[in-house]
Image 1 (cartoon, rainbow, N blue to C red):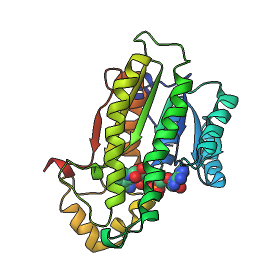
Image 2 (image 1 turned 30 degrees about the horizontal axis):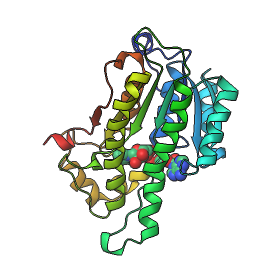
Image 3 (image 1 turned 30 degrees about the vertical axis):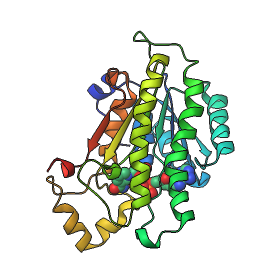
Image 4 (image 1 turned 90 degrees about the horizontal axis):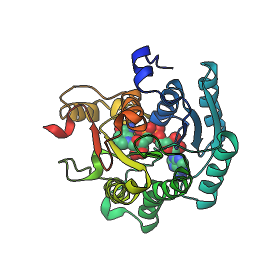
Length: 269
Ligand SMILES: NC(=O)c1ccc[n+]([C@@H]2O[C@H](COP(=O)([O-])OP(=O)(O)OC[C@H]3O[C@@H](n4cnc5c(N)ncnc54)[C@H](O)[C@@H]3O)[C@@H](O)[C@H]2O)c1
């Protein structure tokens, strides 16, 4: 647990909220789940490995949080529908969806096979679409708060989304998926605002998770990465989760269709 202080808990109070986090068995998905639970949310920890999700649930329960684990491959509609069903069975509603799952296999553009391109788009983009659509159908049944809002979607995009001065060789498919997530979120924010649903995207820079292990494990990659990051370090997963917490809370009530860059200054210089 990350010990949210009393002031943070008072302002970012998620008691009575139900949150689903995808890709939550490890990395920053795990820290999103823990921080949301610390703020009082009932959390559904979801990923492709049920066993790993159960370990995160145990961590949350040890600190008196509430959570369940549900296996879900987000690129599979039947599993997405089952995740929604299990969430409703356990907690009765869905208020917050954190689309966090993702894959990032390195492959040079000229060597990339059609199936390899499709796999990344399926998980990273179609998965966010399926999850968002299935959860929105439930969120719109919620009672609106005093600002007319019923639910929140937080996407984990990336500074690899394009148009921010950072291209990544060997990640054409990944960059395409992250750019599309951002565009999809903008369109969804316009369509879903009248229905009381906000949709925002976080664009992390280099964060210390298993996905980015090559950065911290290879001194040359680390050096070239840090050369671009004014804060001169790789980010911690919980530094992204803090932004997730804010966007998931009512304190961000005037934000929708936004991209929040959390990258140690990478794209600012
Ligand atoms: N680590 C970074 O530097 C970085 C930077 C920018 C964006 N991101 C994004 O952050 C998110 C979390 O990644 P992370 O860095 O914690 O890496 P990670 O590899 O630890 O986490 C990704 C999670 O997604 C899960 N996943 C993979 N395929 C799935 C599927 N089909 N269905 C459901 N879950 C699936 C994995 O099992 C894993 O737990 C991803 O969307 C990633 O693209 C990461």
